[in-house]
Image 1 (cartoon, rainbow, N blue to C red):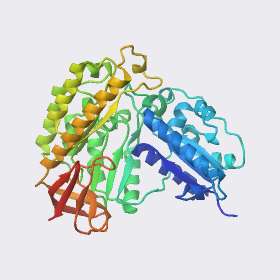
Image 2 (cartoon, one colour):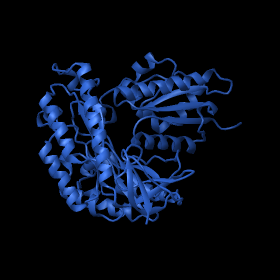
Image 3 (spheres, rainbow, N blue to C red):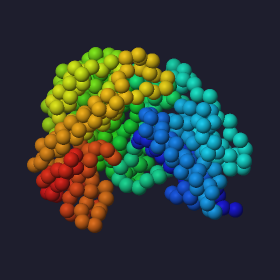
Image 4 (tube, rainbow, N blue to C red):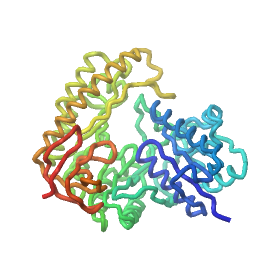
Length: 451
């Protein structure tokens, strides 16, 4: 009898990608056969995203698409929802989406193989009632890190892989529900992070993309807030690793030592993924965040003093409750002055269970759309200008694929998936780090010539 097969479909961020690979590792270790094509699997496991409204819709669409395959002759027997949307809504999602055979929460992950076998056998799964996961963790750092490390099976090939530093978040931003379903911030032990880095390097990975909900908090629950500064050189020294990249930094927590470590450590990309969210101090206080345009520009100046070619990206929320035209102008003026490489622009929408959803001074939905379109157009122009400024710069490009006519990769200032690429008219080995000079740009993408 052939082993049961499973296909994983992943929505959302790089942290979700790591979760999927950990689930895949558990399933493979317990006798499941991993397949790429959902139509060829006994079970389709959809790792959902529950961050914003569009992500929720995409997750539901993916579940429905997988459920449609069950009517085919060789289609899957079951479709199972896991991930943030499943954890966040539990029984409510199961009731509203009967096309899914089961909705499993994070607590089901350690026994995922047994759960899937039972579902395929026809047993009815009882979805959980969601609760605030911030209340589930012990206070002791020793207890927090005692759980065994999950195995991991890579679901993609290529020279770049995400590596999880931590899970959860202790911040209380009024617009964000992530801490309630991801839980409190829990750092992974440095030894576990290093062991996984070596394993990834042995699998051909050349760039480590460090992910968490807030990388600047790494180590605080282990009693050493400077732990990331000491870990970065160790990760960069792992045999086979050419580049280490840190994601998701909180500006208010970016201490001078960590800033310097990211900007100057050999093998660490001078790349600053800074979660500004806005530039008006009034709006930021209502978001329960800290800073203003002046302090943010000062932070960027310190970064560029240490690393003139450093990459800097951010996300901003437009149309937050109470945002005035003056607040919007402050944001736009900041974006002009900041010279960011990439900016993600999000129009505000209420999120279940957040404080901001209770505010009574919300903007009209059409006004939010108008402001979002205005900022998006400005950002498109500004980031294209920033790319043009890089013409003549020498960069190091990590090669990720060879096309018919060119080679495509990313420079140190370009993060995976959303920060643009660099193309060169020369074939090179995937995983090779090539020094090049920038010849031109198109939007945020660059064209370069190898040196």
